[in-house]
Image (cartoon, rainbow, N blue to C red; front, side, top):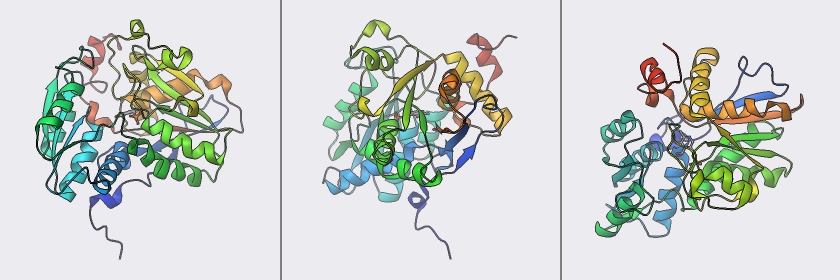
Length: 327
Ligand SMILES: Cc1ncc(COP(=O)(O)O)c(C=O)c1O
C-alpha cells in the first residue's frame, strides 16, 4: 500500500522536465523543476512547512496558535495547508497588486486575508509588512513566520530542493536559474549545490523596479532604482535576510512584458501551465543563452501554477491593457 498520512507528506519530490521547443536554439540542455506539482501548487509549500516545524521545535508556535504572515499567496497557501493539518489559525496580509484569485483561494482554504496598499514604504504602518508585525504583537499566542528573515525558509531548500536537483541530474547540473524574492529558494538551493560542486553557476532572475540587481552589483541600497512593476512573486524593495549574495553569481532583470509573454509560450509550446515568474525565469535564461555551452545542464525553477494568473497574464484583455499584446 502507498498511503500518505496527510497532505503534507506530498510536499517536494517534484519532477524535473526537459524543455524541448522554446530552448531549441540554446546549446545546453534546459530542464525545468516544475514545483506546481506541490499540493499548494507552488514551491513555497516546502518552506512554509519548514518554518512551522522549526517554530514548533523552538517553542515559538504553540498548540492552537495563530500564524501571521505577509504573503502574495503562495507562502500563505503552504502555511494554511500545514496549519489545517496541524490545528493552527492563519491571518495573512497581502497587497492590492496581487492577483485577486490568490486571496480568494487562501480564504477558500480557511485563512483570514487582509489586503493592504501596494505603493507604501515597508516601514509605513499601512504596509503589509507593518500590519503583519502589529497583528503578531497584538494577538495572543500568535507567531509571525516572517518568510523574509526566517532562515528556515532557505533551510527548506537546502534540505529538499537542492538535494532533489543534485540527485535528479545525477550531479551533472551546471547552472541554476531562479527568480528571487525572499531569496530563500535561490540561496538555500545554491548552498547545497555549491557545496557539492562550487563550479555550478547560479543566476538570479529579478524584475525591473526591484532593488536586488543594483544591490548585488554595487552593494548600495539605491531606492531611486525602485518603482512599481507588474511581475509577481519576485524582486524586492529591500534585501531580506534569507539572501546570501555570495551564493549567487549573476542577477538578470526581465521586463514585465517579456516575462508575461514567455509564460504564455511555456503553456502553449511546452504544455506547462505555469505562473508569471516561470516566464520571467525562462526569458532571463534566454537573455543569457550566449554564455552556455553544449555540455551544460541548466535547471530553471518554475515556482507556481498558471491558474493563479488567469485574470492577468492568461487574459488577453489584461495583456492588451498593459500594452503587452496588440489588439
Ligand atoms: C511565484 C513566485 N516566484 C518566485 C518567488 C521567489 O521565491 P523566493 O521568495 O524563495 O526568493 C516566489 C516567492 O514567493 C513566488 O511566489
